[in-house]
Length: 93
Image 1 (cartoon, rainbow, N blue to C red):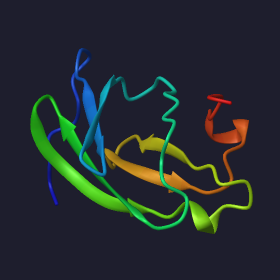
Image 2 (cartoon, helix red, strand yellow):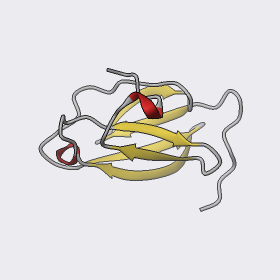
Image 3 (tube, rainbow, N blue to C red):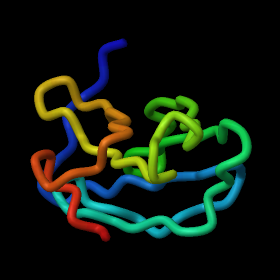
Image 4 (cartoon, rainbow, N blue to C red):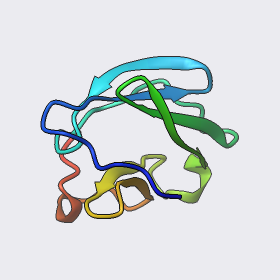
């Protein structure tokens, strides 16, 4: 899917299982708590108030029930990593 890249002041909004999370910058870590770990959850992403993409996160795939979402520069989509280590900039704790 082709979409324009985010601008310098663009904001992403993550909607996790219908619960809107405050806007996030593409390069800033953001901790999201209270995500269900007993089933997959639906994540909808909006960029500057436009629908951008959606995907599922299943914390059962992670040994410590955590995941890191990071923006793939150049592709401008979000990647889920079930090994949330600092190598991807995941420093949310």
